[in-house]
Image 1 (cartoon, rainbow, N blue to C red):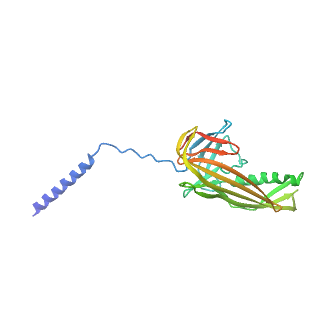
Image 2: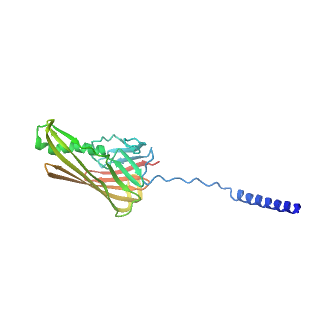
Image 3: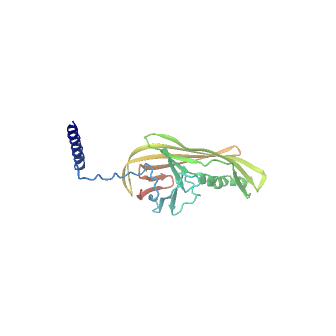
Amino acid sequence: MNGSILKEMRALFLTLCSVLLLFACGSDEIPEPIEAKPNYFPDAVGSRWVYRNADGSKWTREITNGNGSQDGDYQTFTYTPSVSEIEVNFLKPTSFRVAQNQILFHVDKKIDHYIQTELPNSVQDEFEGLELKIALEPISLPKLLFFQGPLTSNSQWDALNLKVNGNITLQNLTLLQIPFEVHFIIKGEVISEGSIETLAGRFENAYQLKYQTEIVQTVFSQEESTVRNQTIWFVPHVGIVKIEDERDVTELIEYKVK
């Protein structure tokens, strides 16, 4: 009886050895590592894009570090030549965040500069020769929704809808205060999807995004509205490859996405 059991155990052992040898010797090839694609909206530190404007001037945007803004999980864009906050272009931020397929741009400094500079200029004729001071009511950090991925044709979204209230003080006299309101409305839309040829090469799956920015100022109960349009071509895993508005046309000429 014991001899029969030993024979069965020996047969089972030999069978297991054969199976292991079969798997070990089945292939001499070592599987190649799978290369990870960059994010739908590239956000890795070290990613870099170089653009050229219609007049031949060039500028660079690079992700230089993470968590660089006052709002913890935002990342920083660095521009060369440097772009000061006084450039009121809401689609050219100094910090951004990718969260739950949403790409959010930090635009608080852009809005603050617009109100501190553009608003006084627009009412200067009414108070020529007087000193104007702008005071804003507290607002939470405004975020512009660049888009929510993945992009789909004909999709539309509210990129920014923000009202800012405050007072214009004349000659530093608290009794001479004029209330105002500035309403920022930015809407985004996917116009088309297709190929595009740029100085950086040809891209087959570019999305054409249109942004309409309307800024409504209300002072003395009188409204003054400004509307601007900007078109951007975005390629998943690459980034923005072309920018066009009434003032300029900008194309990507080289890039490095990590």
